[in-house]
Image: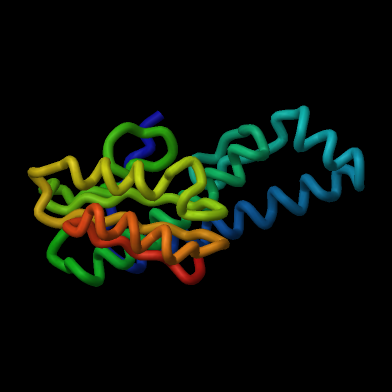
Length: 173
């Protein structure tokens, strides 16, 4: 299944974001109504009861959680990049699609995106910064992320190591 989408407008981003939120709300209400307490926990732990809100197929609940927030960060990143670079169209490689998470069609702008509890969770910020930093063909490199715990000192230390990469922390999704 091709999980690449080309974006050229904020309206396109908004429409997809609204669809993801609406589908997620509907599917989670259905899941919660199918059992309470321990039944609910048993279901999300042991059964494939999740739903991919973008590509509309069943999945593991934890995978749904991870992918949903990654999708939302990617959409926020595209919105930022379209605003900063309005003459470009951007391709998003959603989910497990290979390549950079967001890349301009001419490949001059690249961006990695993630959602995590902290920026040092699984060394994610460092890993993504290194990935985009290593690409010497792109003229602009970004890492855009959302975390619950900012750990600003860690972010600043990583930022100093990769000064040619612009790093942005989203305040909300």
